[in-house]
Image (cartoon, rainbow over all chains, first blue to last red; front, side, top):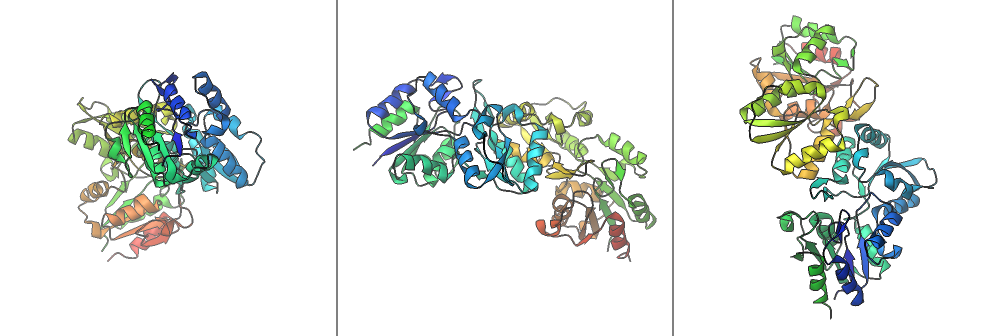
Length: 256
Length: 256
């Protein structure tokens, strides 16, 4: 029985600045079916507030409670663990970490820093790590598909670089962290085995949610999807469908 | 029986622009003992010619035949495999790849590019990889110790980043590649089980040469050495000694 749906955003609802065909209507159809719904994104180039405003502008009806971002999870981790961040993130995300108390414990926080992934910034992060800082990865995605339609290096590559050089393993806060999926599910009172995830990332979205105990996970052939992604990571998707409207069709057909 | 000695350069003979205390005399002592000697370096910021000139300036007597660099090995690989390089290397190394014939097959060549490790350059390399290029790592060292006396990110971190994002495994050309050690040994007609390696990198120098079948490998506590390196990688060093003069003492004491 499906009692809750988690949707990825980039590559599923929109790509770059464009809403994908039928995506807004598909979300409305889930709302109309009274299915509890949450958006779980690994986007780390915008604060949660900026992302909410952007989604509203794109025509998506969404409240702050329905959106889960790795930045928000990282802020929670830092507060809980009394740690001060050393930020290696996009300039637009820095605001998400404003006003945290100063502590002795340090944590290097890595997001999709884009052009800010310079040698000097990475080396500074590396030195903080060997001086004892924890390594927090907002996400460890390998690639993303940008507005130019081409695959690009995502934050995961730089997390892997820092792990390799420092010998430390990153604590991943966004997908596929079971805690991250768990927070979103808990907010709608849904157990993992009543939940379905929809995403374009066969690893973080699909294998990640299935590993976290989800009943099913659908891979869409939009966004960063590449031929062969169905079998590239384990567990494989429950089903692979064309796009979000097809995923919603799959879900609605399985209701009661 | 020791019949041949391989020495690392950076961190063993010199650090930054300074020869380490006693290093020149230690090399002279090996020469005086008529021990065949080769220098195997993972330095990838200079062409072999520039490096030779620099070593001579520092007071080291060395010929081109005694020096093995990853740049030289990469040029050999590209020629042998009819591949054209896409260079992600230090600007000073580019000359090493001048005049190669143009082929359809491509290979991304990664060295210590320093400031040239920008997001755009890394992303260009990533896209070449997913378009089918091979990944050649001049070296996969995690760290190096520069003139400022601090550990810094070495090329290996960026190789790891590209491997992670592209799903391709790098072909490593410098240490610890058995082919690289093998070329240096072959040039002096020395079998691995008659050879000893001296280095400050417990992984690439020490574990690498022992995995390539060397009789012994000495770890020096100069250069990038950090407490605990003796046991950080497997196999462990045959012995850990203070510096190059102590390593030469160890070697000379075992002759005949």
